Length: 595
Ligand code: 6R9
Image (cartoon, rainbow, N blue to C red):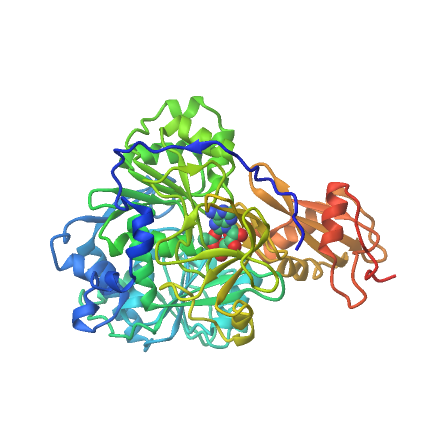
């Protein structure tokens, strides 16, 4: 493996912590020696009762104890809508969530959804989304959360592959659900939004309205008791080849969510925590639902679109103490300038974490300048289910470094033969197998699952990295062609497949192009079919086409027309050549390229 240039600069600047800093994890190095995951199991009711269901651990046990009337969820969406002309500003206690998720569970039960069945949750970020996920857990079924931005092809892939038999959505989003092609789908619950008046015609499918069904359902439903190995959630995520993969987690993952939320997010009883991620992304479940609520912490959820004003206002309004967000969001806030944050009081913040892509030192410094706190990196993946490499509140760190292995895990850097490499050598970022939140399987794809473990004893992340002499791991890039745009994983193959469905496109090759705000943007190289002429209008049309058919975030922000898409003799698109073209660099060895 050869060292590649990356946009992370090796720095020697430190973020120093004062000795008096109060943190849940006081002595990182001691914890690395003494900490055992088994000790965390005692924090859960199932340790004594042997009755397992995550909804009991994150909702019911609080609702039945001292946290009964504590606010679990603060929901705010000031955007006016048909059903909510003055927006929404709501609070839900743990007891409320127990009752509501029991009602939803009773609806699922009525329609014979049972343990292990998959329930698609395709909703905007609203309290109903959280209630649906919790209710799904209550009956032991497996939620498949889907981003609101997904279009037909993405929905078809995910609901088709997971064979979901039940779907919760809104009348508006339903228009993008190709239900005639989803043979397993039996029932749809419509959460009324705007334009719900017209009852849709859904052929043989049964559909029902959320509000009506919830009003009729009982407030009580004992969770279906499971084993620690039973399914928890499926998150679809992109790889470099083929369709998206369904990453299935197990109930036992809660052990990892709990401890990382405690030590890395530093969550405490009186915190007000804001995770800005949508549950369509693993961050929005592991750390938007499971982790914080396993600790009984109050969470803020903000609905609607991104707006810098509203984000600052949310921090002030809820007196947010712990903020978990992503570099793209920090950069977007940064782009809005210094004057805006001065209008708000951001002093409540005690700790900030960042995830999804490398945090540039400028973004870190900027967030520190407006809040007084430096964002701390957390590196992990849909597949790891929980934080693996982090910077910790009580530990000094080097600006730009990804961090150190979470106590009880061991991340390292190896060469192609699986041998750990000396300091400052680039290699594959790997994790020693056996942490609590590791995925259980790739849904219906054993081969893909096994690919992660082809180096014996290690989980192969697909990232490249190096470790420095002090033991910090530095993320360098992806070893494969996966694109991270605004923190979201996009597989080039999925975008290429969408592109070639456009009548003008003969061939397409897709890469991630470095971008100041988004980290990377999706760039497509396209060759046209005979009879089509290159034009800016066509570029726009092609990009819109992907937006409409796949998802907005996957649509190419840049389209470049080429005579021919470079391919190997065996027909593989040479993205390396595309990247060189894009950067105006020499293309290197192209001896395997087709004539
Ligand atoms: C949680 C999540 C995983 C990929 C991962 C890596 C990138 C995540 C990062 C980071 C640098 C960090 N990534 N955190 N890169 N620094 N702190 O992001 O899951 O969407 O599956 O993506 O994201 O490339 O391999 P997921």
